[in-house]
Amino acid sequence: MEQLYALAVGPLAWAAAAIFVFGSLYRLVRMYNLAKEKDGQALAYMSWKFGLRSLAHWFTPFGSLGWKENPLETIATFVFHIGLILLPLVVLGHVVLVEQFHGFSWWSPPEMVTDIVAMVVVVCCAFFALRRLMKPEVRFVTSGQDWLVLIIACLPFLTGVLAYHHVGPNLVMTTLHILSGELMLVAIPFTRLSHMLFGLFSRAYTGSEFGGVRHANDW
Image (cartoon, rainbow, N blue to C red; front, side, top):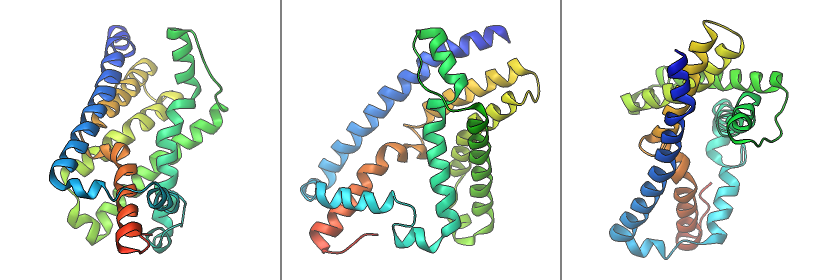
């Protein structure tokens, strides 16, 4: 297990980071070229004004009709995404690991805070799973990849909580936590997690079309 841990924090970590960076660049360039080829005129409608206005409304809790109609889902969605993006950057264990291997560090909130946020992210994943099971219209459009993506997103936080609270062999749980985090990095460009890359552009495009062409709001 020590060898697997060394592999996870060494070569596999670098490989996952490289696949994430270059895979994301490849997907973004490919998507741009595809949009230019299939509907090049549409790119002319892209507008900073209408795009940013749409993003401001959709990135604000209850800033759109869709968010207002589903308050519980809105809260879970915002809490989940904020935790998913920010927590890995500031959790103390990650900061210490970076300092150990690269010699620099940054501020980290108290461990009790990050532990609670991690548990909230896991609860949000459970909520999304129940939503897919309980709501007929969501269950109807749910595919196997949706479940796979949800599991991939949940695993780093679940194993992180278990490792922090010393549930199970610590080295095993820590290694699983690192490997699951690397799995998520690799999956981002090539699964539905890619909405982390395309979400800003698709929302800005929709806002531009509604504002500049239809002269209507898209929120």
